[in-house]
Image (cartoon, rainbow, N blue to C red; front, side, top):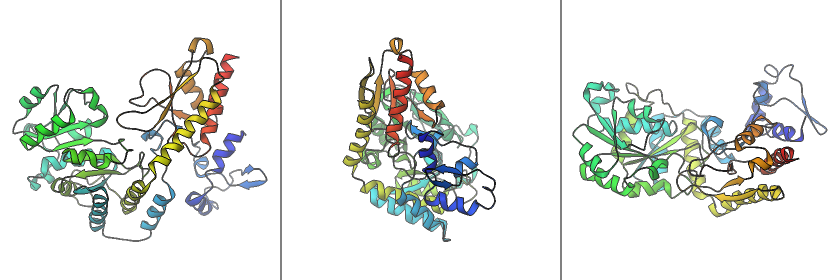
Length: 413
C-alpha cells in the first residue's frame, strides 16, 4: 500500500464518518479486513465498504465529483438541525429572511441546487401574476408562453426552463430582442458564465427587460467568489439571481440560492415543497439543508478572502516549485473572469520532447492511487494543463506535485 493511499484512508476516519462507522461495525463492516496505519489498526472507511475510492479533487467544484466539502461549521449546523422537528414553511421563511438580510437583497429562498433555482424561478415568472396557474404547470404548448435568451446562451439547464411549458426564443442583437418581445414573453434568461459570448451586455439586457416589465433570471451558479457577486446582479437590476450552494461557498451540494424580487421569490415558494399541487414538489429541501445553507452564507460572509487567496496561491507555488527543473515546463496563474474566479495553475510543456500530452496526463493522474481528477475550467483558455487548487485539502498539493513530477520525469527519462 502506498503512503498516499494511507493518507487518504486515514482522512476518512474522523468526525461524523467515524461515528457512523462505529455504529455500522457490528453489521455492515463485519468481516472487512482492518487497515494498518503505522502501529494503529483501523476499520475500513465508509467509502471503502462501498467499494468506492475517494479522489483528490484538482478539478474544482464539479458536480460529478461532489461539488465541494462542507467545513465543520456547516456540518455542525446540519447535524443540529437533524435533531429536531420544525414547521418547514416557517423555517423556509426564516432562513430566507436571514440570508436576504445578510446579503442585502430583498428576498431569498434555499433551493435544491442551482438547477432547482432555475426551474422554480421560471415557474415563478410564469405564475406570479396568476397563482391559479401553479396547479396547471407544465402548461400545454398551445399556450405559447416564451422565454427569451441570447443565442449564445445555450446550456444543459435549458430543460429546467422548459419544464414549465415555455419555449425558448433566441436573439442575437438588441434589435432582435426588441422585436422578439410580445404579450407571451414571460421571462428573459441569462447564463452568466456565457456573458462574453453574447452581443448584448448585461446592462442592456436589464434595461430592455425593465422597459417592458419582463422578469429577468440570471444563473450565476459558480460565480462566487468574490462574495460581492451575491448582491451585485440584484443591484444591477436582475429580478432573480441563482447561485449554487455546494460550490465555492461549500454548503451542501444539493442546495442553491434564489435571490431577488420579493413577489417572485414568494411565488417560487408556492411552486415547491413542502407545498403540494405544484411542479416543484419533488425538489424538496430538507430542514438540515436549509439550516446548513444559512450557516454556509454566514461563514462565507465572514471569511478572510485575502488569506484564502494567499493559501490558494501558496498551493500553486508549491506545485510549480516542485516541477521547475523539468525541461520546457512553464507555469502561469490564471483567473477566469466569470465563474470559478479563483487562481488556477496552468502548466505548459513541450509535448514532443517530454512525450506526454495533456490528455495523457489527465488519464495518468486519474488512474493512479489515489486518483487525482482534473478538468478544463471555462475561462482558462485551451492550451496547457489546468490544475485547480481551491478544492484541495491541506497537504494534497504535495501529492499532486509528486504525481505530476513522476509522470513528467517518467516519460522524459
